[in-house]
Length: 633
Picture (tube, rainbow, N blue to C red):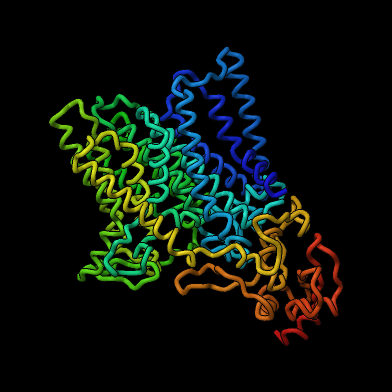
């Protein structure tokens, strides 16, 4: 049942991509257009669904969005295709060899994802499992499952994506599997986007496409730091393959892949200024709009870098300087309007409370900051940013070489200015800007650069002649970063959290059926409930719930983890349950009263219980029951 539910969820989720690519197909469509269209459609779809959440619960908004895409596709076909006699045609560029290359690129993405996405449950699932399920039954502004009544101003787009997949599975998938499936889908789309971009620039052997996609997805810091920091991990930034399992990160990576492809297409020389017109700009705006609520720091960094590039060469983003100025103004407005319209991090109550400047240092993730006045600080910084500066130096050298040979493909002044700005802004932000007095949070400034430079490297690899120092620099940046990630994957098995940790004593969260086990159904709203300690994630990942939680760090106001057992009941009774109200307690149905936590043991002896799905009981805890369990308020 789980496999079928996943397949149905993926098909329904990818419906907008299929509609756009099919109905816009023409003989003269380029692969570069397809590479930009995929992330752009994902961006428009996700933004549209979230905007619908002002009027409808998320699960209903997800259904309405698919109906709108179907109706829009039918209208598009009728008005622009059938009536004008223009039917979809297979693009001439999409021959069998290209199709095979794109399929292989998608399989590489899926393969790298499922290695970790199924046996493990990575990155703050304590927060995201109950949050995904709770979002299904909410409208904007969303609320954290641990903070009912308080708006959640957070980059929640990844959780929205997982909640959409859970809805499209007809509520079969547990939120933990929906989060993993979302990662699989995004990695597959990244593979398709990169594969199409690679093949758009010329014929590539299939094995080169596969290795190129793998190199980008495995890109990250170099771990050869001569004893500085923890083995197999970056110092101030982990590989994007590792951090890509954070729900918002893989969406941002897809946007970065699309943005890099558009900028490389517009910034390639030799090319007469202005001949690109507005090609790709619409997709660029859509991708940056979603990035503004998915990875706000990266969106701000990219916007600033585009503005710097416009000063040097306006043709990177527009056919004229005036048009570029208008576009930059529109992008700034989109950043603010979209963020505020979706009640995201620019709204009052954002988790980002303070930003300040500090002395230059390598900030570290789980290691202490290392000042750049020391050798260790420089070793960590150079190793962490290896793919950035190696590929940037090679691109700059290529531009100089291209001036001597006008026929040589090379980056434009605008693209070089953009990359120079991206390098400088990212490294300066990493080393001297601090968020909420938390050095590890400075890594956010490096995210876009650490992914986009490897994308530029593989897409422009034919620009460098074999055997040149510039080509060696690019290959060093790509291979050392990817090799470091593989070292982590093979030598550091204790870092990923196994799925069994969140399974606790319940069913496997990646194979279970929420409809059968927990009675999950369309239309359920988040309810305040006590959940027995050993089934917490199995239940909260299936049924929308508000639960007790606590702040895991001193620098984030968001509650990130649950409070279980009697302490959780005390918090609920003290802070969350209205006086005189009865609180439901969710307990295991197939275990004896002496094999559950004290709250459920009491509730099953003294309360009224009824089955809830095949695996759980819903028992009532009256104010008198709670008084006996936890004492006076």
